[in-house]
Length: 483
Ligand code: BES
Ligand code: ZN
Ligand code: ZN
Image (cartoon, rainbow, N blue to C red; front, side, top):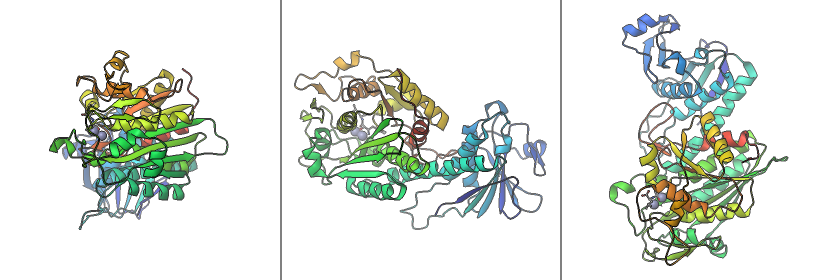
């Protein structure tokens, strides 16, 4: 059941609780002032939430917005996320955050961000809880002016956040339950509901289509692989963008088995595929002027008796041969087929998303995705879209010297280098070999931000749906890349 979000000029009298934002040192309103709040030990730091009795016996939640000069849509999204959890015992809530923003800011962008924060921050994955302690919130009133334009922005935020919550559900579902076949079924159902095409290749078709990377990774599994083709085609398209997502429903490492601790969380190794699915769900609902194709290789990475051996050679869809020297570097093997197929469709640009390397987390931490690619103009567009959507990405290079480190004695290339340094870059350099000549391509290594170890703002523990907001922002603002 989803909550309703509405816009009103002032907080209605019939809501059970109210929430207001407090900029550090500046708050005044609702019968409260800064001196009073400070007396309660409230510092107005970002994410601080205090419940104070309102004048009429109701409850007012005061949420810290930090210093005025740092206030932007991202701060409001995060504050909305914190508020919605604090107020979960009430059935209805008014949220007065838009008023905190100086009139010079984009009110629509802020309203969208608040709506996103309210939906994302209240997300709970309770499928396996006997007593889920669900939020009671059913109705949230966002206080602000701007009428139709602002309420459209709120609807947009809700649609995008709900799509990200679906991506979270997929990532949070255990690997033994969300098999490749079940993931494909969910995609087909959502395509029919939201309005995008989904074509599923089963094992036989995958073999016929010579997806050697996907077959090689799937070889140790009892569960047959799937390959999903997605298409969103508006009447007058201004171009075609292809999205590719890593869909490993569980990564044990294969015969290059992960240590026990390293395997925890590997049910989320399909976060790239989930982000692509979420983005399709959102744009099919919201509309976009660009045609969008999706290419999703889906399998788990297991250790069955006939699993790919270390030293085996696979032939990817584009004909290149790969010596597998570490079966845990499996994402790049299935993406090799995904990127090859995407390139065959001759799109104007490609973006791939993958929980690809632990090395990317060493470089950029848990909240920032690595951004690589072969075309600066396209990389800049993806970077700008992520910034606008409030998802953090940072550029990493694809140095040509690393290509030599992927040379194999036996095959065209091997799937690892002989050093642990620069692992995120080496993976990117490997992927580049499967991108068609002249096609602008950007690669997002989302190993860190696809999962959250903390509850903060719009984030809760587990899958984050990272990438959905960036992709929707990118596709709705799309222009043909010019290098
Ligand atoms: N799925 C992992 C990467 C990962 C690690 C994602 C931690 C999220 C959190 C990937 O398949 C992997 O195992 N990569 C190896 C590559 C190495 C063998 C070259 C890694 O990062 O160690
Ligand atoms: Zn792996
Ligand atoms: Zn993996």
